[in-house]
Image (cartoon, rainbow, N blue to C red):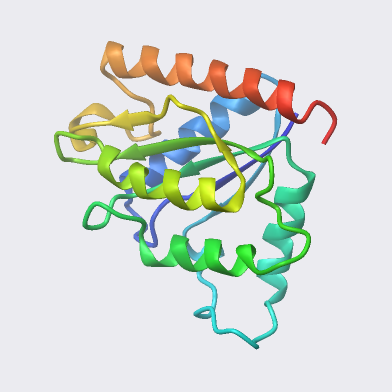
Length: 182
């Protein structure tokens, strides 16, 4: 299955970028082909109507159109979507064909806080639904990620590790059903 991972933070030491790397490795170990757009690869010019999309925006659109699903690993900034990721979504939402229509999505977040980024994922759900994407009801959240993720981004706490496995399995099942040959 062809899958896209996008997100993380612009900060090099981001907990979410670590989690994204772990999820990419897990999916590759299961035999899936991964294309990742993280950190600086999502640093697009601010969206402005009338501007032509950059080659990087078009590359992300093409990757999403060819994918059977996308995993979005997002930091939570003030209980919302970080600016650089919202800007990427805004660019993609203007392109034809839309890469979001019917696209299965797994949401994930890691945070040093007690909620693991869950509040920010609520904003993602609204934006994705508006564009026609299909977000898996389950999400991956890693609270106290500064202590509960190892250096490679793997959850070290048993409950979080089990939740990651369950969410990944649900996502792969959803993607196989909704986009069997994308």
